[in-house]
Length: 152
Image 1 (cartoon, rainbow, N blue to C red):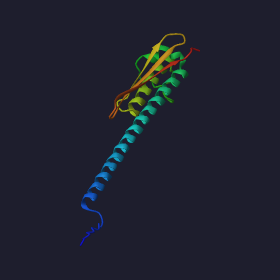
Image 2: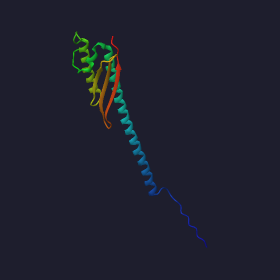
Image 3: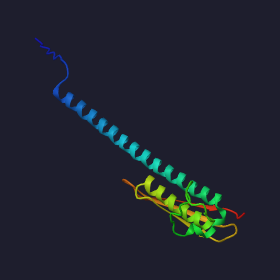
């Protein structure tokens, strides 16, 4: 006489449930890490866009006041040259005011932001605009733009 034994399986066992829970947990951790990297990348892109816009703003200020020349390489000062301010804004005074206002914008829009302009008296004059800032998780970042603006 032969006996056959049949085992029927009913539902999931405890081991299968735990394995499924571990696989789902690893997947969720991966999704959370990917989300965090996406947030960091968008923050970096935002600050870099702000820095490029600020550098372009300074280049435009220099183009408008071409007679300011080496005054853009000096320290900035509030020359009261805003609309409704001083009526006698000679090019060097306007350049100092532009630097002062622009550096305030850089400090306000970028974390730990600082901006400088370097003047080279070549032909045509060359201005190097440098912006530095601190990014969370990345550290120090900077952008540098060289602009040649011919005299009038």
